[in-house]
Image (cartoon, rainbow, N blue to C red; front, side):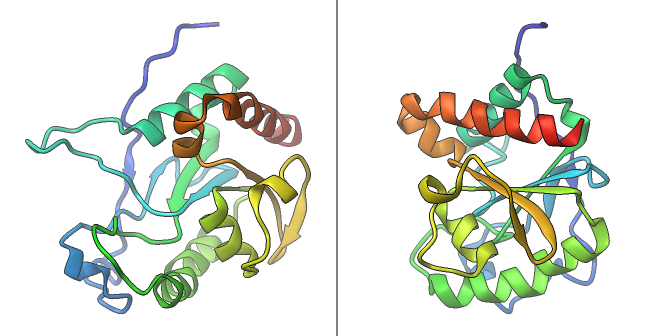
Length: 189
């Protein structure tokens, strides 16, 4: 297997009709909208809570810890990055307090539902409790209780995994992230 080196996956441009969306209020945080990253035609859609930093303080492109951990696990499992598209419940990175429940509801149904209709992924991986609870539309579910199996959610074959940032903070979870991506690899082959 080749050695791992994190890279910036290509950004999927935000549709012109959505780029100036102000419905959820996150535009006030001053962050730009990030629609998704990777291959928009990929059969696997990864759903995270929100985009992380794409640029350092000086404005130079960078691979944040979340992306690095995800890419490392993808590489270790042997999944081709062209099979993966990463998107978010929130399309902007929140920088301060906001109405989480209302904002996630707006973004989920305004943006993510539109992406699903257009892209029609074969498999979905929700990473982290925020993405799981939002996508499953159930505040009582969590990664720990759902991981390791497939679920039919909104007509999509869906599994869950720990958020890559949680894995960075608790390295003992890395093995579980690899297991969950192995489950996805087996299903896509």
